[in-house]
Length: 449
Ligand code: 5AD
Ligand code: SF4
Image (cartoon, rainbow, N blue to C red):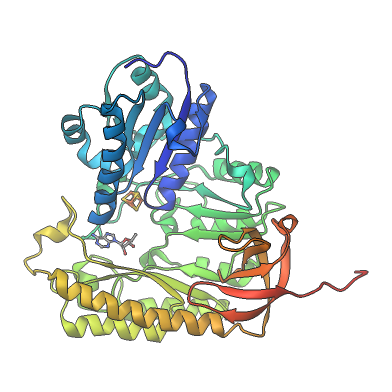
């Protein structure tokens, strides 16, 4: 089906911040050619699914969403269908064969030239592009997400791909090798976002701590943090994701020096057992992880830590799982993304001789999540009665007349207030802590000053 004029494009995003960021770039690039972006899939002439393959569940979800659009298309709806992102990269050719009504398939490295790909599709061709681009000349997209100006915070990518070989992980296969984005380009994007009203920058990459290390003369990650903090108007800096192996003393020192760096760090540990960490090829021990945490807390006593954990990795014994449970308490994580091990195609973990048992993993996951919920609740409750400073991000999702803001330590506080507070720093007293958020009331600012 040929689509002679650009129309409306709807992008459905699955997965991580990388994908959310890529979606913004896709919309910005297609916008250059006149494609108007819409949040309503029914209005769209072009539907793109920006997919995730990190766990089997994410892939299943994508197939069901795609199935719905394919059904509409078979029933006569005039729409171009594309699959982008990590599943597209993994299953490229197979997707084209399995779904004859899919017009376009491209992986994460297709994003920079999405305009050309969509042009070819609009001209009536079926297009598959899963080639990885050259790392030395990787064309990071500099166009801003058209929606960036509506937010208080924005993501800025600092690298693409990943050179780690964690044995469970599909990302190196879907996003290819690591390339660092030139720091001047990163700083320029931060400046432009600040000019649009953004106050909180989240630097994103698969392994941000290794930023710049392979490029002679480039800033290190710590130096990049200082440079971003130097930009007037950047009130808060967050970043994700860090690998504990590369967490250097210079980054830890930045927590002492830079008030803009928020008091929250997401530092995925994956397991509390050294034997499991070795089989995962994480290249740190439980003891080293705890030393990093000590160093961070010395630099920033109120630092809130969150983590990622995989339970039921092949060969994980009851005792090894208990070590993850004790680590959870020892660190006192305020939140975790925790998952059952999910065997991913092509990953080295499939070749481990040790097996895994999904039912056992399920039981372990429940225990882990139950304990995490208790710790999260204890943390939010520990704020009750305290006055905290939040950056107001938007309207509460549940209640009218209530706005939501986050502290630097990432505590979400909902409190009665008007929408013109959005984008402001406000002092609120926390009145009640819940597992994932809290309630509060505004502390009336003193008048005359
Ligand atoms: N199975 C389960 N969880 C996984 N993750 C990555 N790969 C897998 C897998 N095969 C989790 C890790 C990672 C997070 C993004 O997803 O905890 O940090
Ligand atoms: Fe999912 Fe990983 Fe791809 Fe992000 S990089 S979309 S988490 S598979």
